[in-house]
Length: 144
Image (tube, rainbow, N blue to C red; front, top):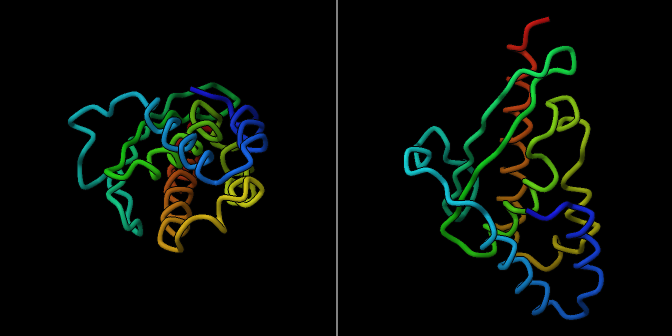
C-alpha cells in the first residue's frame, strides 16, 4: 500500500479531477480483500451512505502502547479509495499516534472535501471517528 506522503504528492501533480478520481479508485483497488467473516454488523461503519466495513486488529507493543492494523471494504469504488487513504494514515500505527493525527485536515489539504458529495465527506468523517474510537478503546484496555 502507498504511503500517505506519496498519495499527497501524486494528488498534487494530477491537474484534473477526473484524473484524481481515477487515482482514488486505483488506490481502492489495491486494498487487500477483506475476510468474509469481517463483513459483520459489528464492523459496519454507521453514518456512511455506502456500505463500509472496518476490521481492526490490535497488538500489544510494550511501553509504546498498542498498535492498530485496519482492513476494510466498501461497495463503492471511490469510498474504497478513501479507505485506502485512511489506512495509509492510520494502519500499523500506535494508538496514541492515531489519536494525534488529523486525517480530516489532510483530506482537506488534498482538496478532496470540495470535490466529494456531502454524504461522502460525512462518511469519511464517520470512518475517521470509528478508527479513533478503536484507538481510544485499545488504549483504555492496554496494560499500564
